[in-house]
Image (cartoon, rainbow, N blue to C red; front, side):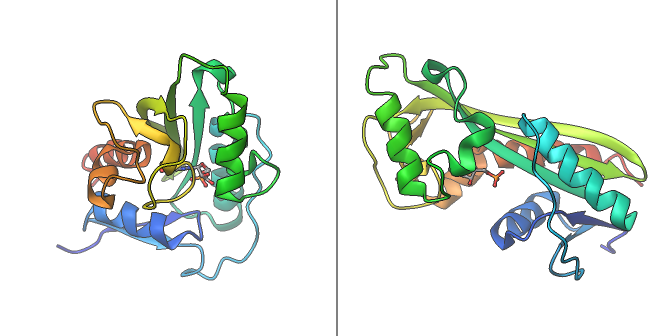
Length: 195
Ligand code: IMP
């Protein structure tokens, strides 16, 4: 089927771009920032995931006028009052995934309630109108690092209904359950209504 619309995904993460392509399907061409030669940094100065997703989206749309999507994700842990939340990417002060997980596990050493959720906020500007799609996956935080698949906090997160961490489950299983996949499926359902 012919691709009618282009949507620029305001990211340089090729893994995310592939994931979005797989879910949004053939009707929309998903382009990354590098593919369109956009080389400015997009700001992420918000206090919430929503603010960050919208700030990146609006900066990009103001600069280019193109239809676009932008996302921001985080891990919210009940016993830590929702932290790391908007600070998920560099909770330890760096982007190092092991250091980030170790900080979480150490802050949770006294936590008996270990429930948490991953959440993705996906912001879309289509023909001048903004839309927000949210996906989340509930689960629990382990006592220790387990598994080697995936990235980020996958080795300490067990999704609800499973006994293995995201890093012990296959990518295929994770990608059907994940917060990002859920948000993208909502976007895909909405895009079906677009001519
Ligand atoms: P981003 O907004 O997608 O870049 O996500 C921010 C941070 O959240 C990442 O740097 C990761 O540390 C963490 N994160 C997001 N999604 C996942 C996931 O699916 N598994 C594990 N960690 C994630």
